[in-house]
Image (tube, one colour):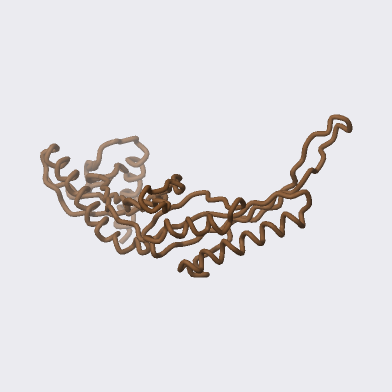
Length: 254
């Protein structure tokens, strides 16, 4: 029993010496120990690390219109009355054309003083007030986008402001399975080529990580472009891209 205890201490001492010896080989055997005892001294990543990209082209089915009203007047009360009246008409135009109230959301409201520099008094003088009220409207019947744009322009008149219109898919998660399949196929093709170039064969996947990069909505600034046929604002949603990437680690067999 005493000899086994001493042998254990000896083995631990040898391992400690080897660990601090700066050895860079993947595995080292220690003279005097059983031949099947190996101490791993490598912290390098093993296998083939590749990334794969999956891209799916989708026809959008939702348009999001960012619009608002802006009014200026000598006093804040008048500016507020003008802005409120214009926004009420714009909201009515949206709902009358099928936009649900739950799909209309206020994004920005601001009251700003308009000033100018008075050279005589050398001070900033308030000359009026500007009120801005912006909302986003989600249009689920995308084919009515042009009609709705025209309706809010007519309702808001000179107070209307339209910032942009964007397009998206209502259920993008429905397309991610296809994107994953494409991404994994891309990763495997790369890994197989690398394994072949290294003179080996591709093993099983030992690690998989997925990331979904941010895909900004597609914006259209030309919402005022009109068709010659019916004088309705032309809105073209086009196509959008849904993509994701995977990082996969495969073992390599020799």
